[in-house]
Image (cartoon, rainbow, N blue to C red; front, side):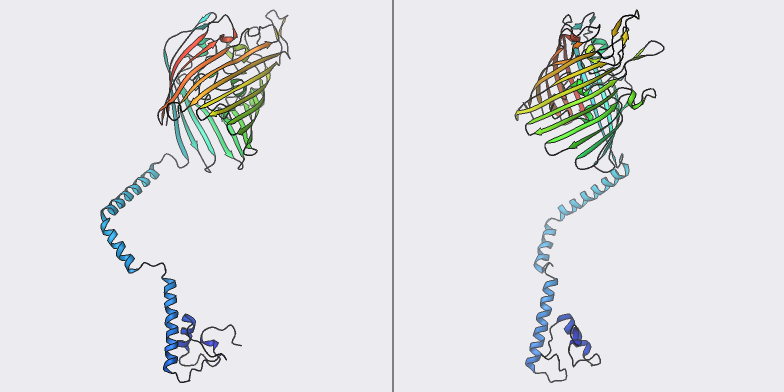
Length: 505
């Protein structure tokens, strides 16, 4: 009957009506220091000897001491308090100064929170200054070899909604549309500069791009404007030092990454198979905003690339299927030119099939790409690529007499390019690099039809040194040469000397 009872009620001879019940109950419940007899009785009316009183009092005091020790084990002792008081006196001035600094920081944080640009958007900028001069020339078109100064400026607004995604809206302007390194002056795209621009001092929204992770292994991309294949497909791993070259031709494989479909809309994905292998793929449409073309009737590209990270060795194998509907001419006779098969190749490699008036014809192509980078040591890297493009005429074109076929549908062209680069990172100081490059720009080795092939390989050699002046300023003096510009032996060798400055903020 008494099992499970606590306090004084556990004793069979104690009842709540007893005059000392509450005192006994408190001592048993709170301190558990009074015990009854083995038969479960307390015998409260029995006479108490002095020995029994001492034993009971001692048991209760010991229990109280134990409880106090348990509840105050982490409390500061008197000695601790005295030491703390002495230290506070010694460091009173420092503590006061620290308190002032904390107050100032709180004030500054409050000001920044009240006046910040955005809680979700960061602003990043880049300004590129190019001081340079080209000389040499293509047949019948001598180069204006004046020293010129050009610029390109970009402001990027990067917005994140989850902390892992990014919406980039970028503004761009430059004065290089008719600069000394433009195709209009040089008569070729072979000597194009990298990190350049074609705006005529007009500010444009050149990129609207949203990327977000669908899982730990899958990153997705959506472009409304300014979609470039190398925004999705990994280029930097196999071109770790050439990717930022001053000339474009030896920077990366332009016949694979700068081809039909780039410039406007696109979607893409990066999937990590494991720690070694990954796949990049996308769909790009450069005339997606044109009501007469749309997503699928204009310039399109469907590239895919397999990447391999083997430690010191990086590999990439790629394939792309592209299509272009060809150039058009408006009511005034002006040509609206579509993107070619490459950005730095010969004219024949960019648009191998043309009608008698010079309009580029509808063309489809298969692009094959292989690139690699190998760290020979911490201070030496070798990299390069080889590209092959097989293009097909999708329409026929007649000669001006309307009788003789100039291009027949289904005729093909073979286009090759390659490059070999040697880089010496951290040569004189941290983060600098000395670059040597040599390669063949995209050149039409064979073109069926009435138009002739390129009779020589357009070759480029470059040397440059890039180094940081500060964390935000980089200088890059460079010299490069193009042999057989436009794939013609009769053309003079073209040279260029450039000093590029990049400001980042």
